[in-house]
Amino acid sequence: MLEREAPTPSRPRPYDSPGPYEKGRAKRREILDAALELIAANGYGNTSIQQIADAANITKAGLLHHFGSKENLLTEVLRRRDERDTASFASGDDAGPRITRIVRHNSEVPGLVELYSALVQEGVNPEHPAHDYFGERFRRVAGNVRADIEHAAGAGELRPGLDAGTLSRILIAVADGLQQQWQYDRSIDMAEHLDYLWSLLGTAPPPPPHAGGSVTPGGPA
Image 1 (cartoon, rainbow, N blue to C red):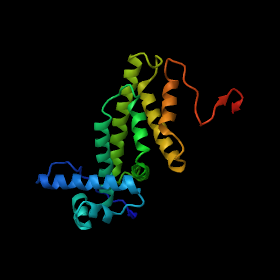
Image 2 (image 1 turned 60 degrees about the horizontal axis):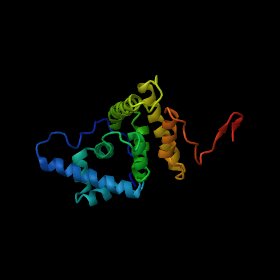
Image 3 (image 1 turned 180 degrees about the vertical axis):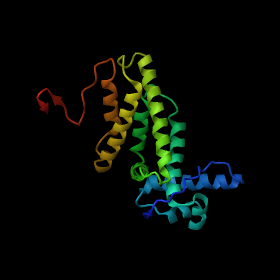
Image 4 (image 1 turned 90 degrees about the vertical axis):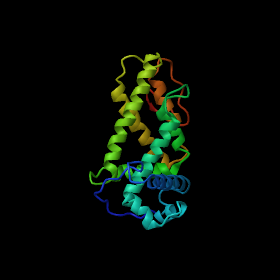
């Protein structure tokens, strides 16, 4: 398994940062793509650094030479995942807001959800290599969600007067919280819950909630 180590104070070097040789950058991308596939398929806790190295046809020492530490590698795995998701979910469309579509996709890659959940906790430490990554990511995702809210409001799909900035942070918190719950109960449809919350903000009457239960004026049904 991906053994625990004390966080190193070094910051991760982005896999596509300028370097002396394109060959080295290409190898880093190959390692990250191999790690993504293994962790998505086998789970974060069931994937070792050695397995990633083997899949990328490199030694463990060679892998660590490219990334400096296990923490740097895992941070860059998430950064690579973000790059892929950005390409796949570049804009809002009739299928719903991007955050809902991304969460729906995340349910298909539980190992990457496990990795995200583990590093988002470890990254609270300012000395952890993932600390800056998550700070930047939360700001970027909040901007994307805010843009989707403003677009939907401009199209008359959402109630007027909503604070898009505040609401974007709330939706991110709900999405992350649902992912935490989903890791304990895979029967939870995360995207469906987010869709329902989004519908509550709309101008049309929301659909009835599904298996999560209903609420009556007297309390939980």
